[in-house]
Structure formats: C-alpha cells, structure tokens
Image 1 (cartoon, rainbow, N blue to C red):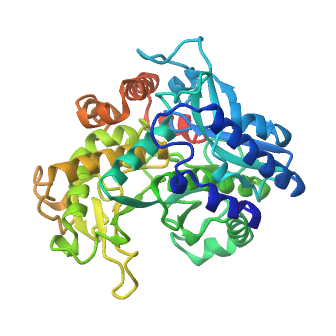
Image 2 (cartoon, rainbow, N blue to C red; image 1 turned 180 degrees about the horizontal axis):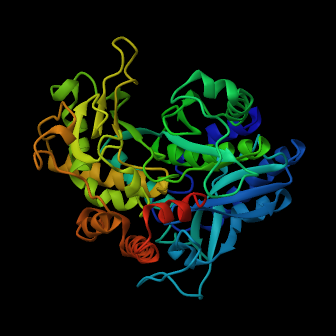
Length: 481
C-alpha cells in the first residue's frame, strides 16, 4: 500500500469509524453520496499511481476467494452502488459445482458488492491493480444475510457492547511447487531440511520479493520462515482487530500467490498437499482486551488469565467440534488434523503445548502486554477467515456470558495418555458437521440463511468426495485453495 492509501486506510477503516455500520442498517442516500465522494478522491490517487483496475473480493463458504473487477474510473460508482454478483455463490462447492439451501440458491436474484474503501490497497505484485474487500448487499441497500464479512462485523460489535476487543492474527502456511511441472505429483523448487537454511538460500530472491511486497502494501511482517513439509513456508503478521486480521489474511495470500507466479512457482494453501504429510494450517492467535489492557496477563486465572479471558477461551474450546465445520471445512482438512502432527487434534489446552488444540502463549517476560495470547491450532488454510473469526467471537462471548472455566490442563502429548482421557476432536468433516448441526450458539449468531448455506456446502462436499482415497482427495483439492 502506498503512503497515501495507508493514510486513507487509517482514517476510513470500518473497524475504527463504523462505516459501513456494524449493524444491519441499509445503505442510505447519504451514505452512498459520502462513499462516492471518498471513492472519487481515492480513484484519482490510484490512477496517478498507475492503477487501472480495482479487484472487489469476497470469500465464499467453500473458503475460495472470488472476485469481480472494475476499471479504476468506475470505483466511484461501485463504492456507492456496488457491482452485481449472484447469491448462488454462497452455495458453490470447492470444484465450482453448485448446491442449494433453504434460503439461498438457484438462478434468481442479485446482490451488490460494495468495496470497503478503508482497505483499498494498491497491489505491489500485480502492477496496475488495486484490491478492496467487499461487503454484500441486496439491491435495495439492505445487508445480505449471507454476507460472511458482515457476520464478522456483527460479532465484533457484540463484543464491543460488552466493553471487549479482540486482537487476532492467522498464521499463513503454504507450499510452493514449480509452475511448469505436471500437476501430479507436485515438483518442489527446494529440497532442503525442515526449517532449514538450505531452503532459504534456494528461494532467497522469492522470499525477499515477498517481504518487499508486504512492506509496499503496509502489512507488518513478524516473521517468515521455511516450515516442515517439502516446499512449505510460514508467515506471521502483526495482530489486528478481527476484521482487519481477516482482510489481511486474504490480501497476504493473494500477494504470496502473485509473487510466486513471477518466480515460476505455484502456490497451494490446501490443508493436505500430499496425504501422509504435514498440511497447511491456519492457526488462529487471539487475545482479549478491555480498556487497553490485555486480559491474558495479570489475572487470577491459569497462568495469569483474567476471568473474562479464561471464560472466552473456555467458550471457544467447548464449541471446537462445531467450529471445525468452519475452521477445518474441507474433507481434506482431516488428512491434516491428526495426532502428533502439531495440528491440535485433541479438545484440550496447555501452556505451550503444541499438540493441544488450544495453546497458551505467555510471551517472554518483559516483552510487553501485547505478547501474551492464545493459539488455536486445529484450524487450517481452507477456512473462510471472516466466518472463522465471527464464529470464534460468538463462541467466546457465550463463554464470557456464562462465566465458563477452563477444564484441567493437559501438560503432555494427549496421544500418549490413556484412550478417552482427553477428548479427540472430530476426525472427519461428517463428524464436525454433526456437531455444527446441534450448535445453537452458531445458528443464533450466524442467522439461518448463512448457517444453512454453510451446512449445504459442507454436505455437498462430503458427497462430492465420498469414496475418494486420501491420494485422490489431496489431488482434487491441492490447487483449489
């Protein structure tokens, strides 16, 4: 992001100033006029920077980023009145086949994609293009009940009504393969050891260009390193509010893919690139705050947790089997979510326990109040980040309201404890969907149209991949995410 658009993002961010509103208020004539005026200024600046097209992006219920684009001169019109997109995108499956649900589906109807100008970003790795996340509205200006991004905003608002704020970040793991090699199996551009300097040397130009692109776009990188699996890397970005964290996740993944193409590399965020290997996680880090104070420190609860922070985490932990339908949403997710893979396959928590679904991270003593956080390891890169963060907020706030307490800590590898002592999370998408179907917390928070559209997509993909071997399942989803 250029300096100019970074300044715009700071002043226009929907998380800071509530525009568009956090509730489900319709777009009024006054709001449309205000948005058009701001877009006119932004479009002029983008055009002066060589931008010719603007991508309006959203993420569907299968976890795929979808887009429409407009010439930069049409940004003013798009900001006020939106760009058309069919409601049926809410029931697309990962292979682009289409199912239906009770409220959403079929060929009729139209929605409007309204860009959030606060995240309008000139793309460093795609010259001539800018990107903005889009909220989805009906043609009359009312919020589409299936809009995942607006669902996340509603949950942020619900937290703020309780005086609570969440800071979050989603780790990004991906695998690169040679783009000009046959699809099956992938051919990796480096064969160095896990976390090894060998990989960094082999792909140092690519990784340098990634860092440069992130800096140009105003994304604050904490660390970037080779990961465990062949051709795998991991990126950690600075924590933000939940909506900003979800937007940044989408933008960062797009940037990684674009830089990779320039280096002859193909990028996969699939949960399982190859069966039997370590897949791509999407670990969620979060901390709960009140009045500028991190509630993960200085409290009377376990390892200094404040009571509200403990209750929030306990609420999420209790809801994890159902949350997996959103955070591990593909049948392929369960090729990754296995014991002794550091994937968080057990419904338990522990201080710095990388086998527990919930890992408490106190941070180094003296580093500061922002370092203490919690990591949910069971989620992966196939998740729609808006759905995931909204649902985690809903579950956590339910825990706060009920003053839930965390169960006993699991200090060791739960896979080595007597069977049944620590609950195993669902081992298939069908099992997580069964938990999702009984979750009153998620149904109430999401509303029936969104809740049932997600359910339809999950059931559709269970049927789509029924009978697939692990090898066939990994191959079918490897390049879709």
